[in-house]
Image: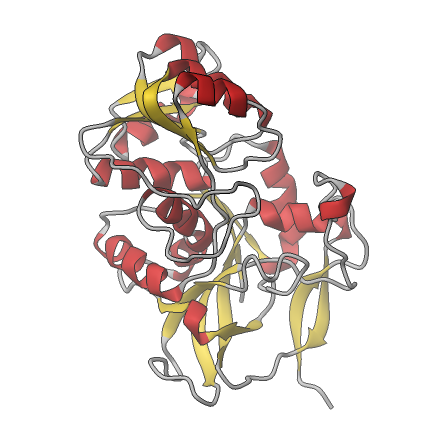
Length: 338
């Protein structure tokens, strides 16, 4: 008989109310992987894209889901058991990870659960200076900012563009971060600042004090002014919101500068960018335990801070998804696991 655990899963795509807190079989530890007893789970946009059946993608790009599906990629917890061939981790170690992304896009990551089996190469030791909630909030957002701005860390071809993504020098440059109060945005702001950039943060004005505390040199309230019209030429725009609206930022980037849309689908400004001499580049974030160890060193000392918008028990995942849908987040939403 299978050992059971609690997890959140859904049996059909839809809104937050399709999420169910149910008994499911606990995963077995397998060679090359580590079984983690989960203490906290971080929410990310792919969680609700998956829950909705990737309705925002063209039909030919929508992965086929096999129900029921357990969503979630980001977790922090404690090692329960170590699979054959795994070194560097032992029972009782505090760890964190982004699990099987993007390979688990169709539901293979399964982090909304009490136990998750994680490939050892995707796992890192949790920084001692932060708790499980903060650690669970970090992986996807921090890895996205890191792979866009510091080091891609892999050579997998991005299907959305013919050339590999390359971070650009930031020391002494001016960087505008749009969506600077959100999960990726507030970490991209801090990383750019650490790299020596002057950072302009674009967000709702109610986040201004927080953004300045994180290092923003200037804060623009998008409710009151259009950033692309109120700044001079910048070297780089990191658009953590992305989509078709990213095109508007081409007007404020100097020739030779760059635009990094975190969510590139719908962007239609390639010809204008080429005419202006601006590089537009994106990348798909990928799981990396090695990079989380690097990022963890910064989280441990407080040199990089991850902010928490709100927390919910795992059993209230639907309420957490409703909070995400409200928008205007300040940092990350996290599920706590008793």
